[in-house]
Amino acid sequence: MTAALKIYLDTFDIKCWQALMPTGLFYGITTNPLLAQRAGLDYGDIQWRDVIETASSLRAKELHIQVPDTSDKALAFAKERLGDAQAYQIKIIIKVPLTREGIALAAMLKQQGYDVLMTACYHAKQYIIAHQLGADFIAPYYGRMAEAGLDATQHLLQMHAIRETLSSPVKILVASLRSVEQMVELAAEGLTHFTIAPAIAEALLTDELTNAAAAEFAQAAKGIR
Image (cartoon, rainbow, N blue to C red; front, top):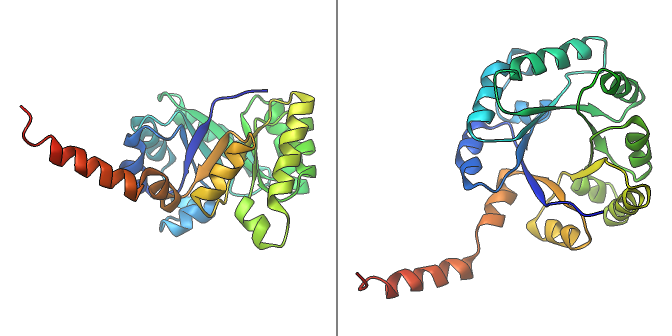
């Protein structure tokens, strides 16, 4: 199975969206309650229509929004977010954690036609769950897996192999990356979807040797009319 490489911006900092989305590098934006907290936002007070309008204006094709919990209220939350997005050219993906309660919620969301991402993945076995539910994405936390003592690379390669074997439509959106080098290594192994923090994005966009070469070009071109 082949697919185009897609990169997402993983932050709820609107200033970072405004700085990085115009590069054209990012297919969409991923968010969650922890990222909202880091950006100084209260998840319960977020003006979602304004957030969605901003993401759309920055040409994000997808905005991934996590449910605040896995209670019955989550279904209403998902419905409201799709309602907020109706006026804008952007797809909303509903994020649900891979807990027992989250799995049941994801099943209901898929039955009602929502696009769903299963998040907080720490084990290759969870890809099987996402596949059986008909989820659209699964987000393994690569950096956190490694920091927990797991063989993160092996788990991701197993998920990738399962996806290839089953010709599964569940896309593996690699999250919690700690460096550009990790992203490059995984892309070389066939992983195609990544969501990265602004610091990783800046590292991806910048290369000292390239900058030095560009400066030389600019200097040489000064006398050209």
